[in-house]
Image (cartoon, rainbow, N blue to C red; front, side, top):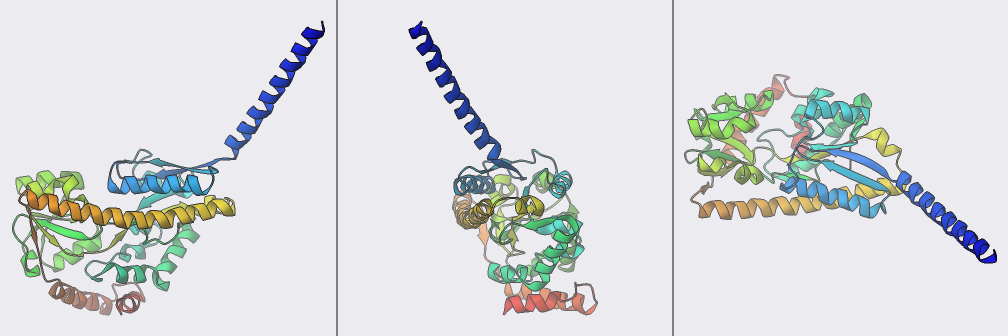
Length: 338
């Protein structure tokens, strides 16, 4: 009897210990917060790798209290659906060009002006100006969405090129060129001013458009040239610095404010480090791309960009005089270029 009693007591002790451990594990699991992070890019793309780098760093710096689940390749829906989810807070993060924020503040379509800044530093100063920061504040006041950290930190590009069927060594040769275009009024206005013959094609239709001759050229981030294989049917590539791109990590502001100070700092630190990682990764991708494509017979053309930017400076001055630019736009742009 005494043995049976001791055995029963030991069993109860073990069961109690297991219950306490399970409760503790359950509490830890319940304490962890999960953020849903929507992206357009495939997981194995340079951008996709940098997104996962960010997510891994958040988990590390939060001690596992905050988990960022990355959903690549529009798994959670197209942009319009994601914007609704982001505003509602069912998606907490969305990484994409800030252009989409013009849904709430139309002036944001000017956040990456075409052929206005010759280098990324100038554009970064512009985005961090009072003017642009004011636009972003309006978005938060309207939709509850704000950027995580510096909106220019995460690099896309890292610069833009024009892929053509014939060499482009002088910007005046743009006149009459059949250029693949997308439905953006600013881009349409600029390229029309330069004399391009615009052909509206979806990004996924561009290769066939170039192959068939519907278009003879396309503008693109350098890092995407190889993946899209445009060089197979348009074997000349010219760097243009058309505009500078950053992938702003737009987040639901209320979701961020509900986090602990530790988890907020984990997000900010991870974002800053992911930005540095993206800059290195994008430059390496662009450099290695050029070497590989040159080996396949693709020609990289050097073009003097000063005449192009001088032409566009006159265009911006005329647009400003006509009142077609946002108030304070040229003042902020000129300050950034000094």
